[in-house]
Amino acid sequence: NNPEQFDVVVIGAGPSGALASSLLVQKGWRVLVLEQQIFPRFTIGESLLPQCMEYLADANLVAPLHEHAASLGFQFKNGAAFHRSGENTAINFTEKSSPGPGTTYQVKRGLFDKLLADNAQLQGAVIRYQHSVKDYKVTDVFENSSDKNNTDKNGGATLLVHDAQQQPYQVQARFVLDASGFGRVLPKLLNLELPSNFPVRSAYFSHFVDNISDENFDRNKILITVHPEHRDIWYWLIPFSDGTASIGVVAESERFNDDEAEVILNRFLEQDPHLKALLAKRELIGPARSITGYSSNVSKLYGQHFALLGNAGEFLDPVFSSGVTIALKSASLIAPLVDQYLKGETIDFEQHYAKPLQAGVNCFRTFVTGWYDTRFQDVIFHTEQNKQVREMISAILAGYAWDTSNPFVAQSERRLNVLAQLCRT
Ligand code: FAD
Image 1 (spheres, protein in one colour):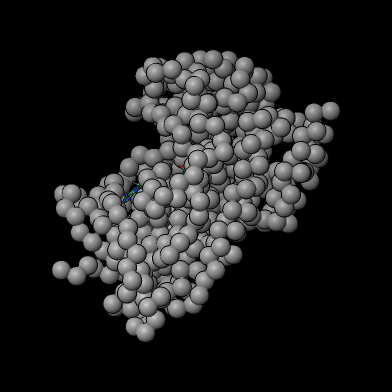
Image 2: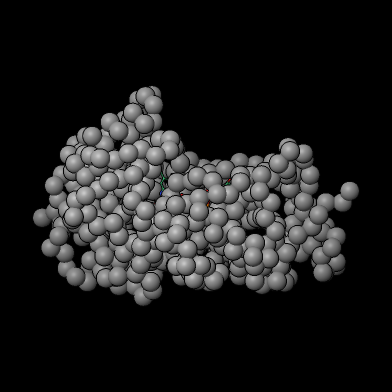
């Protein structure tokens, strides 16, 4: 049997895969998405940034998101609040220097990812759940291509797939987008994996009925709390609109022992007096989980007939909730390039994909590094901040890390150093 052929095969139906698929079917291409799980499935990463809304708008996804937000328990979000040993501060994303949306949602990712994937399917993408990609091989000549004289443009890839019954089959694509997240399918198969520059950290987390009664608690913001003794340990509290919340703690892996995840999570929650009081009546729902060594990198983001999206490329760190934004940015950058490529144009993926994507990732990297070495913590908790500077910082935390008119984007390292020094004197 000849393998089935598609213009594009996308590995993984998470945010980057679903958005890229929607954008490519809108351009008229035949897109197959292979997803190894059944949706909805649990995944972590629930706090979106307002910048996301622009990418979702390109795939007509903002209206369904607003429409279903209340029934799915998604929480309106307008900023980030921070607590460190009695100090409180908050960043309001609507007060930011970059243009664009200033609000978004805190979402249950299983339901959010299903909304995006269903939308891609509605727009014409074929999605096969419980189909797992096992192998990738470059295919020299793509028989059904429109231009049979151009073997380079007719090239593609053959993927080995296992269906829900573990039966193997092959499928061919002129271009493959690896959106497999921490599955990192092509980085593993093609030996592209690089270690992250960040130390190995772990996160312990779960969902709770939070039962928060403190009137000062703002459910419209993610709350980031710095551990009272160790400034490199932090907690997230992401409220949803149905009285539940996602709660987690992050630290270098060696700070955790091998107790059960629930025991570790509760132990750390009891160590911060503010969180302990706020969450005194919390009730655990669902299992506590952990994830370790999630920061990762790759030697290149594209190659012959493929590109890596979202976490299948680089993942930095959860502290500023940048993961889904970067994943959606990667999809919105790659889709028009793949469209041009499939039309036979020569594409410089370095110039038009890798470099622009990495510009924003590198900006986030500066602030993540500054968070753990505490330069950026001192900026955040310095409340007498100049209004203009605060709006520039707010823009980055709202996800506008590609807006080079913001000096904290254009020269992030230098600007952060100067500002941290000012805040410390
Ligand atoms: P994913 O969402 O991971 O989707 C990949 C899909 O590929 C999955 O559905 C998987 O089943 C499928 N797949 C994998 N292997 C295969 C295969 N072989 N064949 C077929 N399918 C396959 N981000 C935020 O924006 N906000 C946050 O608050 C946030 N918090 C986080 C907290 C922690 C502790 C961590 C570790 C991350 C957090 N993130 C957060 C990051 C965020 O979860 C990811 O960046 C985001 O999910 C990446 O999207 P993606 O589309 O690249 O991949």
